[in-house]
Length: 117
Image 1: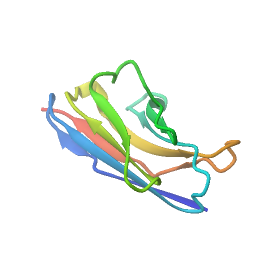
Image 2: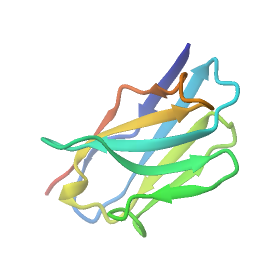
Image 3: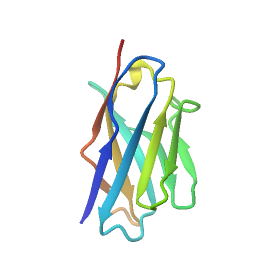
Image 4: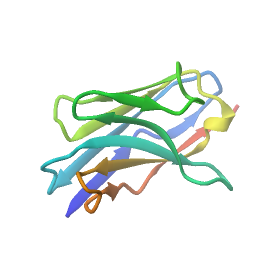
């Protein structure tokens, strides 16, 4: 079993910043990558950013230059620094933990990010 917990969401004005945190626990050996996804109102869940164990990152075009994903000192933690937030960034943000083969991939419950004046 793998537990994934996100934190750091909230309400922020356009142009503001937020930092999301994600921590995985339980059977976390062999984590391959961790990442952030989001699902806005009436939209499908989409990739925001991922980072592999070796530090390779990938970002959605819509967040490049504004968001930054990083790993914590503990290999089971990951952060998403979100700057220059826009109303269209409003969504529930989910953390996902990837394992080789995909069978043990696990999702968190999500944290709400609302960008509004």
